[in-house]
Amino acid sequence: MLRAALPALLLPVLGLAAAAVADCPSSTWIQFQDSCYIFLQEAIKVESIEDVRNQCTDHGADMISIHNEEENAFILDTLKKQWKGPDDILLGMFYDTDDASFKWFDNSNMTFDKWTDQDDDEDLVDTCAFLHIKTGEWKKGNCEVSSVEGTLCKTAIPYKRKYLSDNHILISALVIASTVILTVLGAIIWFLYKKHSDSPFTTVFSTAPQSPYNEDCVLVVGEENEYPVQFD
Image (cartoon, rainbow, N blue to C red; front, top):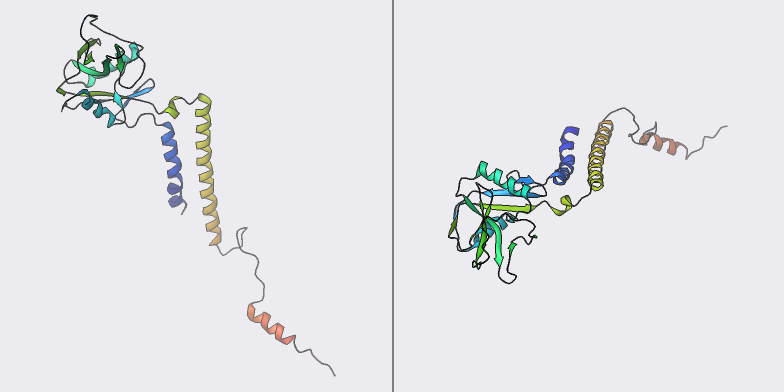
């Protein structure tokens, strides 16, 4: 009985523990620093860059943004191992004509760039950024692509995981461990209770002591006492 009860009791607790330590959505994603990445190696026909973005948003992410040299090197190294498409791949960047500046689709700040061509006189309307997978440099290109061989997607580690302090993580781990221990103890106590309840011997879990007389005996004694014995 205990073996049967434990899995059912521990399943919600183990699920809570797994959720607390999981960083990326699934094993198909790759974690680096505070983000998760997925490389969708799928050729699709597109009418606009929004169709490319939809490939990522369907996975709960956005097109990739890059914010430092280490991240750029990580993406480059991963692409060299997995990528089998053309040398240039779209980044999640576009030129905003209202502000006359490049922006990331995921609304993150432009803190880093690696342009290989810097021509200030060129027309940047409908301009996006591409990553050269052999050099790691960025180049400008037309956003109006007709097809892509694959898409780079990125999502942040869930907020509650990303911004938890070390103390909060420790407290969460202690709470989970305590819950597991209490659940196991509760299952053991229940098992012992059921075991002793089925036992013919008197235990601390047994019911109150029974009278040495059964109901019939009590009734007979009561009837006899209704007629007092008279002596001559």
